[in-house]
Length: 346
Image (cartoon, rainbow, N blue to C red):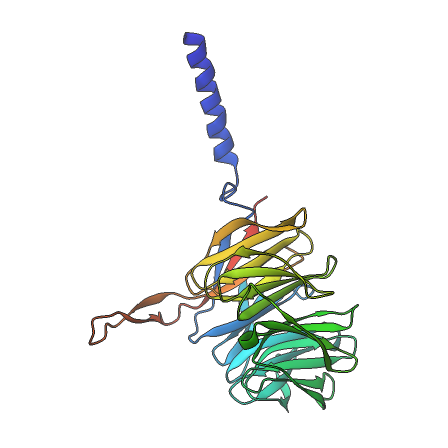
């Protein structure tokens, strides 16, 4: 009995040592919180974009685009004014960035070195998602209330085409080799496929059982789309034929998706304070982690070079109760805007 007690004590000691040296959060899944980057200004936010080569993160916020150095984890500049800003697209080879300014129905062309706005391009109503297409050196804005896409030359700003869409567009991604752009149409629960050579819609695919999609990501090697849907679901679709291959549950209020080609993880960030991490095992999409995030952290982006995730967030205080006694809408604490950084557990 005494020997058994000694053995059990040794086992417990080894377990404690292993637990002590195990990475924080290793038991919960492959990702954990690394740090917070304070930004401090007020206003809402939307999409974020990464330039891995330049080690810069661009976060749309209020009426500006905040620029963060991803090595220093610090704000190093901003692009402004950008009224009603939604997205920021990057053309590293041209040294330019492109901003979709929803409130003025324009896209701004930005010098990435000076962060100065060089010129603006008239778009359809409320440009939201924005994408740079490198083969033809064109920029696409996906115009929410305009139900259209504006295509313009990234160098001259000349409008090349206006594509009528079958509903309200949300996020878009591209397969350069296939010459295709995929765009979520939120109010019809479909994905449209645009030919980049002709600017024509060549396919329209239903996303059922998903509904009203916003976020979208692509696995270029395996030809899969990962679609974030408002009915708390991430749908996986074959990008060659539109066949829905599977789905997993996610939190409500999703607004962004990402895919990491280096790890095979797909992500969906939701406003309920969860980021779903999933991967494909034997052809089946499977959830591997529900990563805790601040509530209302609905958008994020990925740096494929470091595998880090960047999510915009802020602190909120309860709203004032109305005459009926029901609590009002929470309000942002002034100066609390920040970027959460999540890393893979080593």
